[in-house]
Length: 419
Image (cartoon, rainbow, N blue to C red; front, side, top):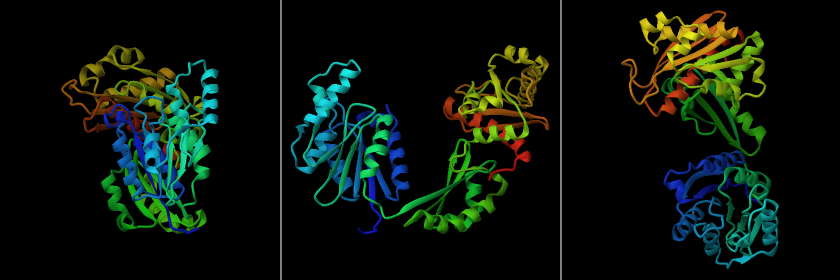
């Protein structure tokens, strides 16, 4: 078999994707899996529930890619048209597969659902299609080798079903790409994307390994990617770039690869024997939510409170005169909230957030104005933020990660900034 790197493409089917009713997370998930397997992924597309347009999208994809994966359109209603489109491209009639029908009937019976004639659509296939069992849902997928050597594989739309089917059924059937992709990601704080780009200089123009920057809620990520015939070769080829980027970024790095900011904060708290509590106004509990997503964090995270009403802040221990003089949305109130939270919960560390999520101003301050504070045994640090006004959710998310970043910076002298 040739070691030519194969091209793969994803076509997502569903009018709801075009109307914005459903976010197409499947394409991103599949593209990452395909890239990890060494395939070149140059295109992905979305198409509505129209047979002619689905056929056209698949023909276009097959004209430029070796492997085409579809998501969605495998249900039992008249607008589920992916099977019909693939059958037309293959030039084969569909028929009801007796084995698939029996499996479907058994599945519906097991969950107590009625079985209708429409449901039989999910038991159809063409002669050249190998059925991909769906162990999570009902609709099976197809694996089709076309005469010219190209492959079409159909996967269900629900992400839980798609991911299980890809990992267990499709991935083992895909041909070798002839290469692997090795990725190493540095995650940074305290630097804007433009500044990181400038710091990395010529490395940003490297082809293989490639170096790219991405602005994320938890900071700027720098991804180094290298393609080679095997993992060891890819790692060795990427090593000079990895070493150089690590040296350039220095203490701005808080984590690598799959590290999360919350997990690194929890790790630092454990190393320092710290205990954390949170008090949130602007973010409405998002800091606590991010922290508690870390498994086993209960040994360092005590609890938190959402304090929207000023009187709740006062009951927690914030001096009413501070609020009266400076307002709820102020650096002074954020600092007082963090101190009061640490005292009330009896913790070594505390995080506080206050600000204006929008869409209307508050206390003559524009949406996106925020103050976050982090209290530690070394003192209380406050950061003023001028977040570009987006949706309330965007402002809250950015402020929550800014608060965790400030806490990380308070903790990092004891554990080192990044690895």
